[in-house]
Length: 270
Image 1 (spheres, one colour):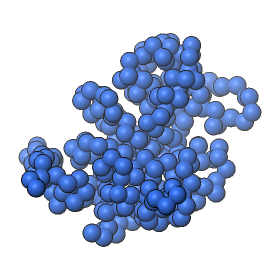
Image 2: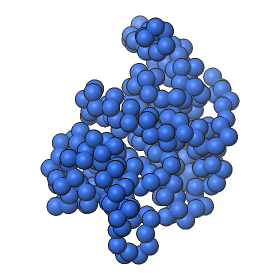
Image 3: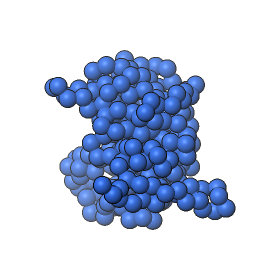
């Protein structure tokens, strides 16, 4: 199925992105725009290329072909510090990296590290930096954790702090790679509600299609490294598309007087 053409005037654009490893293509000719100021769900089965595509946007994996643009500007041509000021990331490996780097450090110190992209050399943190960090912790309801050691926190608490760290970076674009993994249902919903209320340009890689329907404005669907559809979330996450991408039967349900859509799933009979 060809992808429906959907373009936003601004946002994060993946223009014909292809990523290869040897003879294997992890992502093939991905082409869509995550609209500015909206939340885009990036969905697809395991191994579909979601994480790889996101990594091309936060400059961990360089595309073999194609261009990633932010509001029209080539991200890979920007100085690294400039790109970091514009795009913040909460990746699957973030907790491991911060755990290793944060031995003995407080939550406040861990989040304060995000402000380094706004300084040159070893210039000291400012009162404005500290205020930004405190506000970010409060936004994710983690202000009470400021003096705790990061490695002492529970998994859910660490996720809150990592989101605060991404927010403290002060970027207008936020990338989240499976941020709800290993979280209880209440905090999954809370985290995505926070992201939605921020008003930033955000792309969230998700497994749960109903979370995408509940909290995202747009969706892009990957299957075997190829983009098979993208556009407004309710037009993309349909019964037919779910069957094509995920190999399951989906049934649509409406909630709240027909204003919200959810999906129920059944295994396909062979």
